[in-house]
Image (cartoon, rainbow, N blue to C red; front, side, top):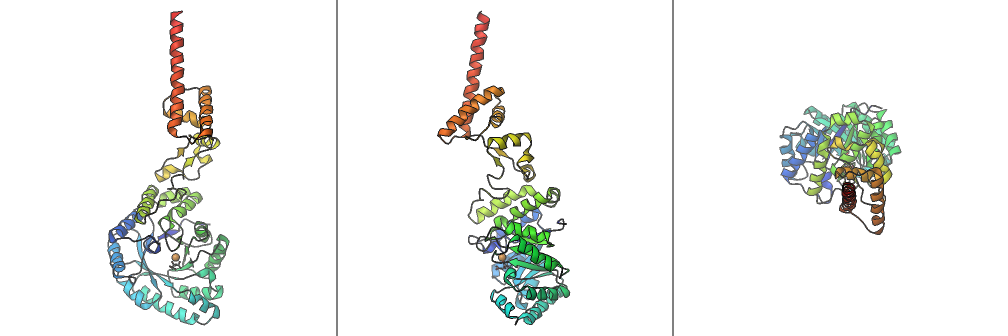
Length: 391
Ligand code: HCA
Ligand code: CU
């Protein structure tokens, strides 16, 4: 499996605009585009210029920012939309056959020649204007396979740059994604894009399986925002790909920017970054149980497949609770520059656990117990020292 040539099509400014809480001003869109460009995504997809005059103006503005990332816009497979999109400065156009009722027509087998004819007209027009073009159909997993392959073969033959498989309703599981993309890989020679909704929590796994099966492009959005509960999140895909090949992902993307990107978009759409978010959630690198803490202190990779340092983040060892262990408490004592031997630390640890059995404790409580124990030791030392000198 060669995943090194995968590309991210970052759709926060298209699919993400379809998120319930999203309203991006023009400046905010430009800032999101700049951040995503600095992160290193290969493409940014923006809302259709046919959606509204401001959408068109924003697309034109972002296309003139001089970003390295390619700018795409997403339109219905219709000549009117294609003509509108051509002059916006976008590098490419993603066309989608956009109604679910079409899929019912697929199963009757009536409208395939019509779909192919209009797809060919639109694709040839876009190509004649020198732009990149992608063709996809909504709800690919509930379409008739033979119909889908017939259409995709036809558009591949006229030189479409990419075809897209869309799991519009989040119904597909990883095995189904693998099988469909694998089959498609045997039918078309162009690039293959996957767009996966997350209704049943499979969006990251489905995207990964798509790549394993031969897809080349994955759609993401920041925090996964989009229709309903959204699509494959940028951070989730990055985490998944990092676990697969850390070196390649480090080389491709400016990973420390991810936190700023997640936080910025979360603020704009008025949500918190979830506590369990990939990489940037506040517990993503927090270790708690004594046994975990001990191993992490010896070698972080025992319980970490993602190195927080690569993302400009640090791990946190949570010591103030009843599951704590003396190794973690010893580390805390060292951070406080309290000189305690292992037996002393074990005694303090027992005190901490006893207190934590009675109430929720904080790091301040731990520090207090450590300091108190330490100062008693010192006073004992001092008293012993005085006794020693006076005898
Ligand atoms: C939608 C359209 C889409 C398009 C995906 C694509 C989907 O329903 O809003 O162009 O590949 O999920 O089908 O986002
Ligand atoms: Cu979608």
